[in-house]
Length: 608
Image: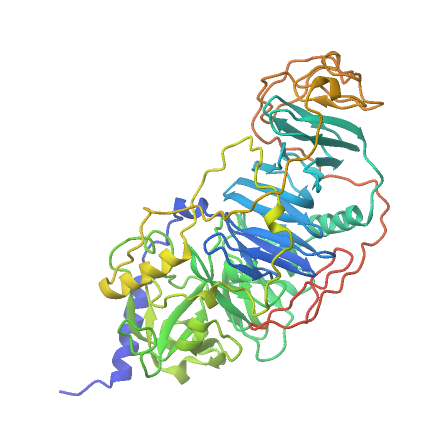
């Protein structure tokens, strides 16, 4: 009987495995993923830090760093950053600002502004439920527009509407701020008073926001992708869209020879999602978290965004993992000295390594012996495989990534379940740069008024995740379940309450309490030439629509859905001068990431 060579047997087994997989249904979207939304740092200039909600560690921010509920974001002086929540909603933070993301779910975003200035920009019609909480009021930017929100050292909140209407809520009532108006609120949530005046002229901050919004609205790449795909605006100018008869519209980046997807960057750890790719390319959000890559003859690497018109969901990466080489790499019985990954091609079988299986489903580690070139189409491309030693992977060292073809690595152990690599604290960092812990954090506001209870999915403490991996190594199943979770919010303390008038006799000079009519407040009237409706005491104000005249008379408020859509995008009457040019520090990171965005005039990201 003729003996079949080992490599040929492995190749045949791999072909059978892939053939069987091609008839399996695609992974259904787990509803738990939708409760664990992921935002991103889409732009940064200067010093931006993130306090992780699962560990409490401060880590240096970087473009395309993933953000989850429970994370804090802080900027140093003369710094700024942009956080993209989805295709329609963004927030931008100025210098010395501190923000806590409390809810990030599919279509529901809530956050707490402790200090500094942000601009919340709604650039496209959408139905998301949004709320920004401050020490004394809640702001619901649910309509198209640009809303500037500041919390100053005294704990006062200023809300300026540059474009659109925004609703402000307190326990005693609510108020609307119209285009060109500024509301200032002071006092505690049970005794908040406010005044509305004409907004001041636009400054450099406002003009920069205008330029960024226009860049978002004028981007062409979003038209080529299906619903749910975010971050494609950064692909404009960084590559070319073309039509492939096999897949439709595909995108090819402007890169040099020898480049391949998932080579420049690092693997970081996020609870629930596990190993998450953070690419060094400024455009590397959509192409690394949605769709597939393939080698297009005559064109090079191309990104296929997936079926058009079908809802797409975020993934920490879209790759195939495998181990190869000698040595004990993972400490769980697998004899691999190296861990490799390869971008998945269109229609290849995808084996997720996160989700419910990570938090408690039995039998987690999956492994299949295959021949790399047969298992992955992109493994046949020179340099299509990236790999590091198992020790470097655990230590977060991705400076010396090795590049192979499938023929070079030969037989591999393909990971078909949960990844057999336990994270360390080094894997929590987005970059090797040292984070700058914001000064005065202990004196920041810790008490916020929330119109909606900030519920949602809870973060798993990092130490508990590590213990779960240790248990899985012994039993073959992840031991960390849903019990014992904590929000991982972290604590900050405030130095003192702002000094405000405590009685109605002190309410004067245009100030009045929420829920009071002009006749109930000293110095009543319409506050100059502004036209703002007074809120009824006890009204819900939940997405309310104003009715009647704008003369200050009491009127009935109707409560439609949380967000109304408008057919037109916001327009700006501000001078169309270019935004200031920013030049972030050029210090390099351990994973090859740029430290800043190098943006100017609201344009694309600068390459380093």
